Image (cartoon, rainbow, N blue to C red; front, top):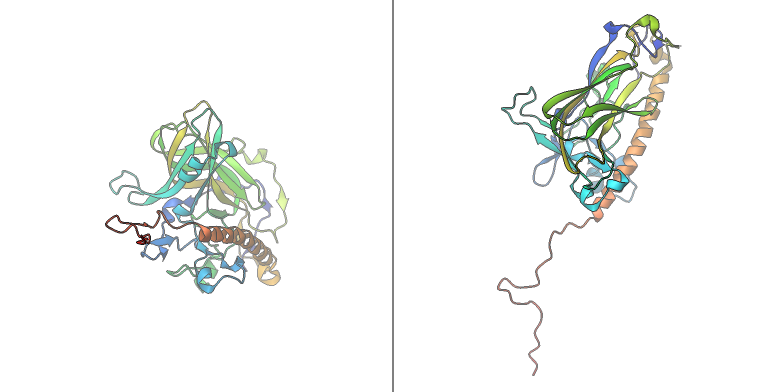
Length: 357
């Protein structure tokens, strides 16, 4: 995607004064309601803003009808819970899940009446350290172009307005924050129910490095904002180590949300953990200061656009292969819940009788 902006000042790893610090919503779970791709009963299954078509990674053996079903999104029921090996049992795998949890309309919170993320994790009941990851159904792409989708989840042609925005599909509270330098603070709005488990936020940067941030313990009741403050954040500019990079071409640094980690200590009670999450926010320094320049570098050279297109293609390849395999597994899954009866309605057998004497 070509952009007409370029960079005024040199990029710095540790940037600027507090005047340039910004608060951004990394992901807002109230925006992930299912609103498209209805099933045979007319119930929406996917989130139109984040729906992705992975049929591009499917082989030629699939029919067009099958490929039309190869869609997924960040709709809350699509999120996954995975446990560490010692906590992974048949019971925990079957019952640990993510759902859309409706908040009562009369609740005393700004998001009353909306759906938030509801999580159930079944931890071992014996003395054992355990942890669970709550992750999206696919790694959130950082370079997917911003386009709208119709009621069937099919992406439309990008409009001039969407191109002019310069945004990618998963920005604005859908999992990606662009132009992120040093992170100052992270906040999670969650409901606690006196559980002793600990909570981590998992973020990945533009270099592919995933880091986890300890938000605190969930042993409280009601809604609360848990905050992680960067202990190495230096407010005084004179004490910062400033690194200067070339102005062009360097992709805009970003962070993406890769999930939560919930940890259970061996000394704490096991069994069910139930949690609710509304959003994740970040306060950060800007990585770059952008403005118009005398020459539109990107329009002339197209280096950043080529890099982003290559990364986008790599993201889609990894994403599609995993989803196609899941589609095949779902197609092989038994759909029957009970056996067909071999008896008539009056209780008599359908088996042939032998009247021979």
